[in-house]
Length: 458
Ligand code: URP
Ligand code: ZN
Ligand code: ZN
Image: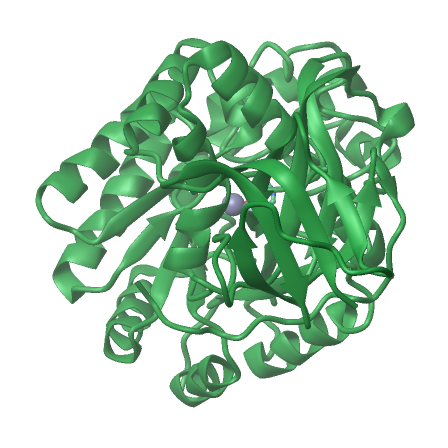
Protein backbone atom coordinates (compact mmCIF):
# COMPACT_ATOMS: atom_id res chain seq x y z
CA UNK A 1 0.00 0.00 0.00
CA UNK A 2 1.16 3.52 -0.76
CA UNK A 3 1.98 6.10 1.90
CA UNK A 4 2.26 9.88 1.50
CA UNK A 5 4.12 12.00 4.01
CA UNK A 6 3.07 15.54 3.40
CA UNK A 7 4.60 18.93 4.02
CA UNK A 8 7.53 17.90 6.19
CA UNK A 9 10.80 19.71 6.75
CA UNK A 10 12.93 17.02 5.10
CA UNK A 11 16.42 16.95 6.61
CA UNK A 12 19.25 14.69 5.47
CA UNK A 13 23.01 14.76 6.05
CA UNK A 14 23.42 17.29 3.27
CA UNK A 15 20.08 18.86 2.39
CA UNK A 16 16.99 20.49 3.88
CA UNK A 17 13.77 21.40 2.10
CA UNK A 18 10.01 21.37 2.60
CA UNK A 19 8.25 18.68 0.65
CA UNK A 20 6.26 15.49 0.32
CA UNK A 21 7.49 11.92 0.16
CA UNK A 22 5.64 9.22 -1.74
CA UNK A 23 6.29 5.63 -0.69
CA UNK A 24 5.40 2.51 -2.59
CA UNK A 25 6.62 -1.08 -2.41
CA UNK A 26 8.75 -0.30 0.64
CA UNK A 27 10.77 2.41 -1.10
CA UNK A 28 10.68 6.14 -1.65
CA UNK A 29 9.40 6.54 -5.20
CA UNK A 30 8.76 10.31 -5.45
CA UNK A 31 9.83 13.42 -3.61
CA UNK A 32 8.13 16.69 -4.50
CA UNK A 33 5.68 19.38 -3.47
CA UNK A 34 1.90 19.25 -3.54
CA UNK A 35 1.75 15.52 -4.32
CA UNK A 36 -1.85 14.30 -4.58
CA UNK A 37 -3.17 11.48 -2.47
CA UNK A 38 -5.68 9.28 -4.34
CA UNK A 39 -8.49 7.88 -2.16
CA UNK A 40 -7.38 5.08 0.11
CA UNK A 41 -3.77 6.17 0.37
CA UNK A 42 -2.47 6.58 3.90
CA UNK A 43 -1.38 10.17 4.55
CA UNK A 44 0.80 11.47 7.37
CA UNK A 45 0.66 15.22 7.85
CA UNK A 46 4.21 16.24 8.77
CA UNK A 47 3.50 19.98 9.08
CA UNK A 48 5.63 21.41 11.87
CA UNK A 49 7.73 18.26 11.97
CA UNK A 50 11.09 17.28 10.57
CA UNK A 51 11.49 14.17 8.45
CA UNK A 52 14.80 12.36 8.90
CA UNK A 53 16.17 9.21 7.30
CA UNK A 54 15.73 6.29 9.68
CA UNK A 55 18.46 6.39 12.30
CA UNK A 56 21.09 3.66 12.46
CA UNK A 57 22.68 2.47 15.67
CA UNK A 58 26.07 1.05 14.66
CA UNK A 59 26.82 -0.64 17.98
CA UNK A 60 24.32 -2.69 19.95
CA UNK A 61 24.25 -5.91 21.92
CA UNK A 62 20.96 -7.80 21.89
CA UNK A 63 21.84 -11.49 22.26
CA UNK A 64 25.00 -11.51 24.36
CA UNK A 65 26.40 -14.23 26.60
CA UNK A 66 28.87 -12.22 28.70
CA UNK A 67 30.35 -12.25 32.19
CA UNK A 68 28.51 -15.45 33.21
CA UNK A 69 25.09 -14.13 32.18
CA UNK A 70 23.09 -12.87 29.18
CA UNK A 71 22.07 -9.37 28.19
CA UNK A 72 18.36 -8.95 28.86
CA UNK A 73 16.80 -7.92 25.56
CA UNK A 74 15.34 -10.21 22.97
CA UNK A 75 15.32 -9.09 19.37
CA UNK A 76 11.67 -8.24 19.82
CA UNK A 77 12.12 -6.01 22.88
CA UNK A 78 15.37 -4.45 21.64
CA UNK A 79 14.00 -3.64 18.19
CA UNK A 80 10.80 -2.15 19.57
CA UNK A 81 12.83 0.04 21.91
CA UNK A 82 14.99 1.05 18.94
CA UNK A 83 11.99 2.00 16.82
CA UNK A 84 10.22 4.00 19.51
CA UNK A 85 13.41 6.04 19.74
CA UNK A 86 13.69 6.52 15.95
CA UNK A 87 16.29 3.85 15.18
CA UNK A 88 15.15 1.81 12.19
CA UNK A 89 18.32 -0.24 11.69
CA UNK A 90 20.82 -1.54 14.20
CA UNK A 91 24.12 -3.29 13.76
CA UNK A 92 24.54 -5.93 16.40
CA UNK A 93 27.85 -7.29 17.62
CA UNK A 94 27.88 -11.01 16.84
CA UNK A 95 30.11 -12.18 19.67
CA UNK A 96 31.00 -15.86 19.94
CA UNK A 97 33.70 -16.35 22.57
CA UNK A 98 37.22 -17.64 21.89
CA UNK A 99 36.03 -21.16 22.65
CA UNK A 100 33.10 -21.08 20.22
CA UNK A 101 33.11 -21.97 16.55
CA UNK A 102 32.74 -18.64 14.64
CA UNK A 103 30.49 -19.99 11.92
CA UNK A 104 28.20 -21.70 14.41
CA UNK A 105 28.17 -18.47 16.39
CA UNK A 106 27.20 -16.48 13.32
CA UNK A 107 24.34 -18.88 12.55
CA UNK A 108 23.19 -18.71 16.17
CA UNK A 109 23.07 -14.88 16.19
CA UNK A 110 21.22 -14.86 12.89
CA UNK A 111 18.68 -17.37 14.17
CA UNK A 112 18.01 -15.26 17.26
CA UNK A 113 17.19 -12.20 15.15
CA UNK A 114 15.35 -13.77 12.24
CA UNK A 115 11.59 -13.29 12.42
CA UNK A 116 11.88 -11.53 15.79
CA UNK A 117 13.18 -8.07 15.03
CA UNK A 118 10.69 -5.31 14.22
CA UNK A 119 13.38 -3.23 12.52
CA UNK A 120 16.10 -4.04 10.03
CA UNK A 121 19.48 -5.19 11.25
CA UNK A 122 22.83 -6.60 10.38
CA UNK A 123 25.95 -7.69 12.26
CA UNK A 124 29.58 -6.91 12.90
CA UNK A 125 31.23 -10.34 12.99
CA UNK A 126 33.58 -10.69 15.95
CA UNK A 127 36.88 -12.43 15.38
CA UNK A 128 37.80 -13.81 18.80
CA UNK A 129 40.42 -16.35 17.65
CA UNK A 130 42.34 -16.91 14.44
CA UNK A 131 42.99 -20.52 13.57
CA UNK A 132 43.39 -22.62 10.45
CA UNK A 133 39.72 -22.49 9.51
CA UNK A 134 39.17 -18.82 10.30
CA UNK A 135 39.89 -17.35 6.89
CA UNK A 136 37.49 -19.71 5.13
CA UNK A 137 34.79 -19.12 7.71
CA UNK A 138 35.15 -15.35 7.58
CA UNK A 139 34.98 -15.42 3.79
CA UNK A 140 31.78 -17.42 4.03
CA UNK A 141 30.30 -14.94 6.49
CA UNK A 142 31.29 -11.97 4.30
CA UNK A 143 29.77 -13.70 1.28
CA UNK A 144 26.52 -13.82 3.27
CA UNK A 145 26.50 -9.99 3.26
CA UNK A 146 28.50 -9.00 6.33
CA UNK A 147 30.65 -5.92 5.74
CA UNK A 148 32.61 -5.59 8.99
CA UNK A 149 34.58 -7.57 11.54
CA UNK A 150 34.98 -6.78 15.21
CA UNK A 151 37.99 -7.33 17.43
CA UNK A 152 38.36 -6.88 21.16
CA UNK A 153 41.72 -5.79 22.50
CA UNK A 154 40.07 -6.05 25.93
CA UNK A 155 38.42 -8.96 27.78
CA UNK A 156 41.44 -11.22 28.10
CA UNK A 157 40.74 -14.93 27.55
CA UNK A 158 37.10 -14.39 26.56
CA UNK A 159 36.59 -12.14 23.54
CA UNK A 160 40.12 -10.71 23.48
CA UNK A 161 42.66 -11.63 20.81
CA UNK A 162 46.45 -11.47 20.87
CA UNK A 163 48.64 -9.41 18.56
CA UNK A 164 49.26 -12.27 16.15
CA UNK A 165 45.53 -12.77 15.73
CA UNK A 166 45.00 -9.04 15.38
CA UNK A 167 47.58 -8.87 12.60
CA UNK A 168 46.08 -11.86 10.77
CA UNK A 169 42.55 -10.44 11.04
CA UNK A 170 43.58 -7.05 9.71
CA UNK A 171 45.67 -8.50 6.89
CA UNK A 172 42.74 -10.64 5.81
CA UNK A 173 40.27 -7.77 6.12
CA UNK A 174 42.55 -5.65 3.93
CA UNK A 175 42.50 -8.34 1.24
CA UNK A 176 38.73 -8.75 1.50
CA UNK A 177 37.88 -5.03 1.63
CA UNK A 178 36.20 -5.44 5.00
CA UNK A 179 36.38 -2.76 7.69
CA UNK A 180 37.44 -3.88 11.20
CA UNK A 181 35.80 -2.37 14.26
CA UNK A 182 37.72 -2.53 17.53
CA UNK A 183 37.23 -2.25 21.27
CA UNK A 184 40.49 -0.55 22.21
CA UNK A 185 41.63 -1.16 25.77
CA UNK A 186 44.84 -2.99 26.62
CA UNK A 187 43.64 -6.27 28.15
CA UNK A 188 46.84 -7.08 30.03
CA UNK A 189 46.97 -3.70 31.74
CA UNK A 190 43.28 -3.95 32.72
CA UNK A 191 43.82 -7.43 34.20
CA UNK A 192 46.88 -6.31 36.21
CA UNK A 193 45.19 -3.17 37.49
CA UNK A 194 42.08 -5.11 38.47
CA UNK A 195 44.15 -7.65 40.43
CA UNK A 196 46.02 -4.88 42.23
CA UNK A 197 42.87 -3.00 43.25
CA UNK A 198 41.09 -6.13 44.48
CA UNK A 199 44.18 -7.14 46.48
CA UNK A 200 43.98 -3.76 48.24
CA UNK A 201 40.33 -4.38 49.12
CA UNK A 202 39.05 -1.89 46.55
CA UNK A 203 35.99 -3.80 45.43
CA UNK A 204 33.20 -1.26 44.78
CA UNK A 205 31.98 0.01 41.37
CA UNK A 206 33.89 3.25 41.91
CA UNK A 207 37.08 1.24 41.21
CA UNK A 208 35.96 0.16 37.75
CA UNK A 209 37.21 3.36 36.13
CA UNK A 210 40.61 3.35 37.88
CA UNK A 211 41.07 -0.25 36.69
CA UNK A 212 40.79 0.90 33.06
CA UNK A 213 42.16 4.45 33.09
CA UNK A 214 42.31 6.75 30.08
CA UNK A 215 45.93 5.78 29.37
CA UNK A 216 44.88 2.16 28.92
CA UNK A 217 42.33 3.15 26.29
CA UNK A 218 44.79 5.55 24.65
CA UNK A 219 47.31 2.72 24.41
CA UNK A 220 44.68 0.42 22.91
CA UNK A 221 43.69 3.03 20.35
CA UNK A 222 47.31 3.73 19.40
CA UNK A 223 47.98 -0.01 19.25
CA UNK A 224 45.07 -0.60 16.88
CA UNK A 225 46.07 2.36 14.71
CA UNK A 226 49.65 1.08 14.49
CA UNK A 227 48.43 -2.31 13.31
CA UNK A 228 46.12 -0.63 10.78
CA UNK A 229 49.05 1.34 9.44
CA UNK A 230 51.20 -1.77 9.16
CA UNK A 231 48.54 -3.81 7.38
CA UNK A 232 46.81 -1.07 5.38
CA UNK A 233 43.42 -2.22 6.68
CA UNK A 234 40.50 0.13 7.37
CA UNK A 235 39.44 0.41 10.99
CA UNK A 236 36.76 1.85 13.22
CA UNK A 237 37.28 2.47 16.94
CA UNK A 238 34.10 1.70 18.87
CA UNK A 239 32.92 3.56 21.98
CA UNK A 240 35.88 5.95 22.22
CA UNK A 241 35.41 7.64 25.59
CA UNK A 242 38.15 10.16 26.35
CA UNK A 243 40.40 12.93 25.10
CA UNK A 244 43.59 10.86 25.44
CA UNK A 245 42.28 8.14 23.13
CA UNK A 246 40.83 10.72 20.74
CA UNK A 247 44.26 12.32 20.39
CA UNK A 248 45.74 8.96 19.40
CA UNK A 249 42.99 8.37 16.84
CA UNK A 250 43.32 11.84 15.36
CA UNK A 251 47.11 11.54 15.14
CA UNK A 252 46.67 8.33 13.16
CA UNK A 253 44.05 9.88 10.88
CA UNK A 254 46.38 12.82 10.27
CA UNK A 255 49.06 10.34 9.14
CA UNK A 256 46.64 8.86 6.62
CA UNK A 257 45.64 5.75 8.54
CA UNK A 258 42.15 4.72 7.41
CA UNK A 259 40.47 5.06 10.78
CA UNK A 260 36.98 6.17 11.83
CA UNK A 261 35.74 6.92 15.32
CA UNK A 262 32.52 6.09 17.11
CA UNK A 263 31.57 7.46 20.50
CA UNK A 264 28.48 6.34 22.36
CA UNK A 265 25.76 8.31 24.04
CA UNK A 266 26.64 7.42 27.68
CA UNK A 267 30.12 8.92 27.27
CA UNK A 268 28.69 12.21 25.98
CA UNK A 269 26.27 12.69 28.86
CA UNK A 270 27.22 10.64 31.91
CA UNK A 271 30.44 10.92 33.88
CA UNK A 272 32.26 8.68 36.32
CA UNK A 273 30.46 10.12 39.34
CA UNK A 274 27.45 8.00 38.26
CA UNK A 275 29.50 4.82 38.77
CA UNK A 276 30.76 6.20 42.09
CA UNK A 277 27.27 6.20 43.58
CA UNK A 278 27.04 3.72 46.43
CA UNK A 279 26.15 0.07 45.80
CA UNK A 280 23.86 -0.94 43.02
CA UNK A 281 23.27 2.66 41.87
CA UNK A 282 26.93 2.79 40.88
CA UNK A 283 26.81 -0.68 39.35
CA UNK A 284 24.07 0.41 36.95
CA UNK A 285 26.61 2.73 35.36
CA UNK A 286 29.45 0.27 34.91
CA UNK A 287 30.42 -0.17 31.28
CA UNK A 288 33.68 -0.44 29.37
CA UNK A 289 35.42 1.78 28.54
CA UNK A 290 34.17 3.33 31.77
CA UNK A 291 32.34 6.59 32.27
CA UNK A 292 35.06 9.23 32.55
CA UNK A 293 35.89 12.55 34.18
CA UNK A 294 33.38 15.12 32.92
CA UNK A 295 36.05 17.14 31.06
CA UNK A 296 36.25 14.44 28.41
CA UNK A 297 32.71 15.23 27.32
CA UNK A 298 33.85 18.62 26.02
CA UNK A 299 36.42 16.87 23.84
CA UNK A 300 33.84 14.40 22.51
CA UNK A 301 31.24 17.06 21.71
CA UNK A 302 33.86 19.27 20.01
CA UNK A 303 35.09 16.35 17.95
CA UNK A 304 31.56 15.34 17.03
CA UNK A 305 30.67 18.85 15.84
CA UNK A 306 33.87 18.96 13.79
CA UNK A 307 33.32 15.50 12.29
CA UNK A 308 36.36 13.92 13.97
CA UNK A 309 34.00 11.63 15.84
CA UNK A 310 32.25 10.10 12.87
CA UNK A 311 29.30 8.26 14.39
CA UNK A 312 27.29 8.15 17.60
CA UNK A 313 26.10 4.74 18.75
CA UNK A 314 24.85 3.38 22.04
CA UNK A 315 26.69 0.19 22.96
CA UNK A 316 23.21 -0.77 24.16
CA UNK A 317 23.77 -3.63 26.58
CA UNK A 318 21.08 -4.10 29.22
CA UNK A 319 21.69 -6.07 32.39
CA UNK A 320 19.09 -5.70 35.11
CA UNK A 321 19.66 -4.87 38.77
CA UNK A 322 19.75 -8.53 39.86
CA UNK A 323 22.51 -9.15 37.31
CA UNK A 324 24.42 -6.06 38.35
CA UNK A 325 24.36 -7.38 41.92
CA UNK A 326 26.59 -10.24 40.81
CA UNK A 327 29.34 -7.71 41.39
CA UNK A 328 28.52 -6.86 45.01
CA UNK A 329 31.74 -8.48 46.24
CA UNK A 330 34.00 -7.35 43.39
CA UNK A 331 33.57 -4.72 40.68
CA UNK A 332 35.18 -7.13 38.22
CA UNK A 333 32.03 -9.28 38.41
CA UNK A 334 29.57 -6.50 37.53
CA UNK A 335 28.21 -7.24 34.03
CA UNK A 336 29.44 -4.38 31.86
CA UNK A 337 26.82 -2.42 29.97
CA UNK A 338 24.16 0.29 29.94
CA UNK A 339 20.97 0.29 27.83
CA UNK A 340 20.42 3.21 25.43
CA UNK A 341 18.99 2.07 22.11
CA UNK A 342 15.72 3.91 22.78
CA UNK A 343 17.24 7.11 24.15
CA UNK A 344 20.13 7.80 21.74
CA UNK A 345 18.42 9.92 19.08
CA UNK A 346 16.36 12.02 21.46
CA UNK A 347 19.35 12.64 23.72
CA UNK A 348 21.59 13.55 20.81
CA UNK A 349 18.94 15.88 19.42
CA UNK A 350 18.28 17.49 22.81
CA UNK A 351 21.81 17.86 24.18
CA UNK A 352 23.51 18.14 20.78
CA UNK A 353 21.25 20.01 18.36
CA UNK A 354 19.02 21.94 20.77
CA UNK A 355 21.44 22.71 23.54
CA UNK A 356 24.91 21.95 22.24
CA UNK A 357 25.46 23.64 18.89
CA UNK A 358 25.52 20.38 16.93
CA UNK A 359 24.47 21.12 13.35
CA UNK A 360 21.32 19.39 12.16
CA UNK A 361 23.07 17.83 9.16
CA UNK A 362 25.96 16.58 11.29
CA UNK A 363 23.37 15.10 13.66
CA UNK A 364 21.77 13.14 10.82
CA UNK A 365 25.16 12.18 9.46
CA UNK A 366 26.51 10.92 12.81
CA UNK A 367 23.34 9.12 13.84
CA UNK A 368 22.48 7.60 10.46
CA UNK A 369 24.28 8.36 7.20
CA UNK A 370 27.90 7.76 8.21
CA UNK A 371 27.13 4.31 9.57
CA UNK A 372 25.23 3.46 6.38
CA UNK A 373 28.23 4.50 4.31
CA UNK A 374 30.86 2.79 6.43
CA UNK A 375 29.00 -0.49 6.73
CA UNK A 376 27.79 -0.96 3.19
CA UNK A 377 24.14 0.06 3.59
CA UNK A 378 24.10 3.40 1.74
CA UNK A 379 22.07 4.68 -0.10
CA UNK A 380 19.45 2.08 0.71
CA UNK A 381 19.69 3.29 4.31
CA UNK A 382 20.84 6.63 5.70
CA UNK A 383 19.26 8.66 2.91
CA UNK A 384 15.94 10.07 1.76
CA UNK A 385 16.12 9.65 -1.98
CA UNK A 386 14.15 7.99 -4.73
CA UNK A 387 15.03 4.30 -4.50
CA UNK A 388 16.00 4.37 -0.82
CA UNK A 389 14.16 2.19 1.68
CA UNK A 390 11.27 4.16 3.15
CA UNK A 391 12.69 4.19 6.67
CA UNK A 392 11.54 7.60 7.83
CA UNK A 393 11.38 9.37 11.16
CA UNK A 394 8.76 12.11 11.41
CA UNK A 395 10.19 14.05 14.30
CA UNK A 396 8.35 16.40 16.63
CA UNK A 397 10.77 19.07 17.91
CA UNK A 398 8.09 20.49 20.22
CA UNK A 399 7.72 17.35 22.32
CA UNK A 400 8.88 17.65 25.92
CA UNK A 401 9.46 14.65 28.17
CA UNK A 402 11.56 13.02 30.87
CA UNK A 403 13.30 9.66 30.47
CA UNK A 404 12.40 6.91 32.90
CA UNK A 405 12.72 3.15 33.24
CA UNK A 406 9.00 3.09 34.00
CA UNK A 407 8.14 4.05 30.41
CA UNK A 408 11.00 2.49 28.43
CA UNK A 409 10.60 -0.46 26.05
CA UNK A 410 14.00 -2.08 26.53
CA UNK A 411 13.84 -5.15 28.76
CA UNK A 412 15.60 -3.62 31.72
CA UNK A 413 14.48 -2.43 35.15
CA UNK A 414 16.57 0.73 35.21
CA UNK A 415 17.55 3.53 32.86
CA UNK A 416 21.05 4.93 32.83
CA UNK A 417 19.46 8.25 31.89
CA UNK A 418 16.71 8.33 34.53
CA UNK A 419 15.19 11.78 34.96
CA UNK A 420 16.90 13.42 31.99
CA UNK A 421 14.81 15.85 29.97
CA UNK A 422 14.28 15.42 26.25
CA UNK A 423 13.15 18.07 23.80
CA UNK A 424 11.83 16.21 20.78
CA UNK A 425 10.86 12.67 19.86
CA UNK A 426 9.58 10.77 16.84
CA UNK A 427 5.86 11.17 16.26
CA UNK A 428 5.90 8.47 13.59
CA UNK A 429 8.50 5.95 12.42
CA UNK A 430 8.30 3.82 9.29
CA UNK A 431 10.26 0.73 8.31
CA UNK A 432 10.18 0.17 4.57
CA UNK A 433 6.95 2.13 4.34
CA UNK A 434 5.10 0.51 7.20
CA UNK A 435 4.24 2.75 10.17
CA UNK A 436 5.78 0.98 13.16
CA UNK A 437 5.56 3.74 15.80
CA UNK A 438 3.13 6.55 16.55
CA UNK A 439 3.64 9.00 19.41
CA UNK A 440 5.89 6.83 21.51
CA UNK A 441 3.92 3.61 20.99
CA UNK A 442 4.79 0.59 18.92
CA UNK A 443 1.82 0.05 16.59
CA UNK A 444 3.41 -2.04 13.89
CA UNK A 445 4.35 -5.50 12.82
CA UNK A 446 6.60 -7.55 15.07
CA UNK A 447 9.10 -9.54 13.07
CA UNK A 448 9.01 -7.14 10.13
CA UNK A 449 12.78 -6.61 10.28
CA UNK A 450 15.08 -8.09 7.69
CA UNK A 451 18.75 -8.81 7.79
CA UNK A 452 20.58 -6.36 5.56
CA UNK A 453 23.30 -7.46 3.19
CA UNK A 454 26.26 -5.36 2.21
CA UNK A 455 25.57 -3.09 -0.76
CA UNK A 456 28.79 -1.20 -1.38
CA UNK A 457 31.56 0.18 0.78
CA UNK A 458 32.13 3.88 0.47
O1 URP B 1 30.34 -2.32 28.78
C1 URP B 1 30.17 -2.71 27.65
N1 URP B 1 30.64 -1.96 26.69
N2 URP B 1 29.51 -3.85 27.42
C2 URP B 1 29.31 -4.50 26.19
C3 URP B 1 30.54 -5.15 25.65
C4 URP B 1 31.43 -4.18 24.95
O2 URP B 1 32.57 -4.03 25.33
O3 URP B 1 31.00 -3.55 24.00
ZN1 ZN C 1 33.32 -2.91 23.74
ZN1 ZN D 1 29.75 -3.07 22.74
